Image (cartoon, rainbow, N blue to C red; front, top):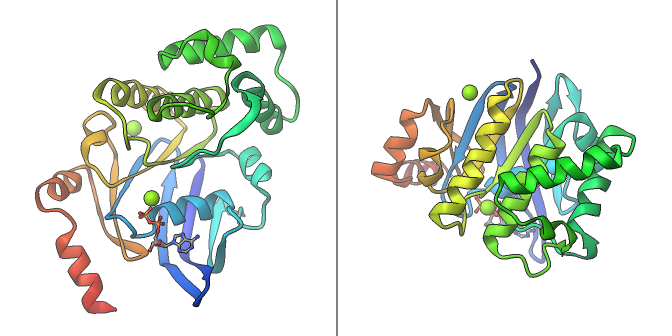
Amino acid sequence: MATLEIKDLHVSVTTEEGEKEILKGVDLTVKTGEVHAIMGPNGSGKSTLAYSIAGHPKYNITSGTVTLDGVDILSMSVDERARAGLFLAMQYPVEVPGVSVANFLRTAKTAIDGEAPKLRTWVKDVNAALERVTLDKDFAQRSVNEGFSGGEKKRHEIAQLELLNPKFAVLDETDSGLDIDALRVVSDGVNRYSDQGDRGVLLITHYTRILRYIKPDFVHVFVAGRVADQGGPELADELEANGYDKYVKAAASEA
Ligand code: ADP
Ligand code: MG
Ligand code: MG
C-alpha cells in the first residue's frame, strides 16, 4: 500500500495586483485501493490543487507538504513525480503539434520506466488501450490533442492512464464536456484502472454525474481553497440534492 498525503498546503499565484492565495490549508490523504472524489464549485481551487501536485511552475507553494510514502514530492521535477508514481490528467491538456500519440505515449512510458518499452509488445498494448476507449487504431498517428474533440481528449487521457498505470491518478474534470457514451467509456477506464487494486484515484469534479459510474470511497467538499467537509459516497447524494450553498456561506462568513 502507498499513501499520498497533502498537509496544510497553501498555494498562491502571482498576479498583477500581487500574490493571491488560492489554496488555504488543504489536508487530504489518499491511499492506494481508495477512490476519492473532490467536489466543489467553480473557482474553489480544485484545478490549482491538481496543478500544484503536478508541479506546474505557475503555482507557488508557500507552505505545507505533499508526500508519497513520506517522500517529499514538491521538490521533485515533473518527470520525477511521474517516476514516483503520480499521473496527472489535466483539465485542458496541451497540444503537442508534430508529436504523434504513439510517440508521445512511448516517450512518457520510457520516462517513467527508465527504459524504452519493447516495440513489438508496445504497439500491441497501445492498440489494445485505444480499442478499450473506443478510439480507432489510426488515432495513434495523429498529433497529440491537435484537433481532438473534447471526447477524444478524455479518451486519450484514459488510454494514457491505463498504459502508464501509475500508483496514483489525479483526474481533473474528466467528465466535463462528455456525452453519455463517452462518459461511460471514460468511467469504465477509470474503474478498470482502480479495480486492479493497489491504485489510488483522486477524481476532481463539480458535477455528481460521473459518480453514478465511478463509486468513490470518500467524498471531499472543496470550497474557498480548502476541504470544508468529508464523508462517504452519501455526501455526493447530499450535494446533488442541496448544492454547495451552505458550504459557500459558511466559508464566506469565516473569511
Ligand atoms: P476550480 O478548478 O475549482 O474551478 P481553479 O483552481 O481553476 O478553481 O481557480 C481557483 C481561483 O484561482 C480562481 O479564482 C482563479 O481565477 C484563480 N486562479 C487560478 N489560476 C490562476 C492563475 N494562474 N492566475 C491568476 N488566478 C488564478
Ligand atoms: Mg475501491
Ligand atoms: Mg478546475
